[in-house]
Amino acid sequence: MAVDYLLDDNGDIALVNGSIVLTDTIEQSSKQQTLISLSTYKGEWDFNILAGIPWIKNENNNISVLGKGTKQLLDSLVQQDILDRENIVRIVEYESILDAATRKLSLSFTAETEDGSTITINDSLSI
Image (tube, rainbow, N blue to C red):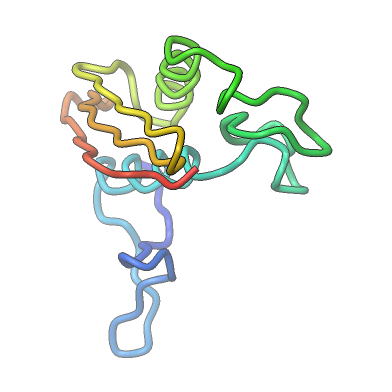
């Protein structure tokens, strides 16, 4: 099982009585890793410019799925990113709604992990 620092609802490292908390389960770790990856713009992270989704063009990424890309391309990239996460073996259900004007992606999916359990994410990403 991958062990990660547990992040709170604000994306900060969770602390209990001043001590760092770690993820307890594959589901918890996989869900957290997926949300971080989907919120990352490809090319923005100097340590790995290939990480993330090519939401917009930048100096390290010449692709932009917002504005010029199709919804089918966007969904394909998002689904592949989900499947690229450690411990996720398949997507059971997937739905997304893109509001290009507000740059919000409402995402709902269920994915199966290596141990047969599932994670469900219902979230809105600002992209």
